[in-house]
Image (tube, rainbow, N blue to C red; front, side, top):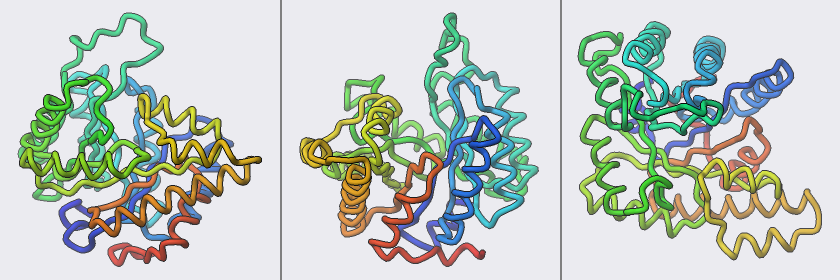
Length: 304
């Protein structure tokens, strides 16, 4: 379903993120997670894309499998890093042929395994360039939906790690919107004040598309360190750290993290958030607990 139809049918939206597995064991674990979450009827699920396209085929294969074997609506990530125009054209053509209706267009992280990587060699220097290319692909009539791909982009409530100037950061986000982005999905955050401020600054900048809040519950202290890496230095508020550090065992840490994320979601819903996107890390327990606590009803736009 095109993102424009999703937001026309329901707001707030609820969605999940998965990453492509690299082993048979992790594949089996992911498909169990997908099975457990499918009954919650999310409005869409996104599939990540490794730095420099390192999981390109894995991402493509997972997206197609979800599209063809489940009731879920997959949204593949697509990045600028290490790609020429023909690469992106080929990927978009495959997704269009498979009936994939939406793309999340991202700048992407520099590949850690390529010592000689030069951003200047990439055909797309900024995510706005990638959005423009996807839009042109759609306008050329290469997608079966006359509207072409729905396009999502990233937002950073805590600030973009590569753009310390917060005024320029908003200019860059506005450029992505002006090129044709339909919605924004934020990086994970742990202080809702950051999100509310970000949303207000978007309004001041003339950004009027839906802004979906990215939530990742802390389920372990090790996972918290990984989150800080994934989110390029995510800020953990003292309130959260205090209760996590006071936890005596792994089970309590998980409960504390889920309860905190549930409070975040409750506040976001009370403040008319356009949607909530759960970073699942390919596990279902935390998301299912939050759904149960908040009494979130399945999306009416999906049939299982």
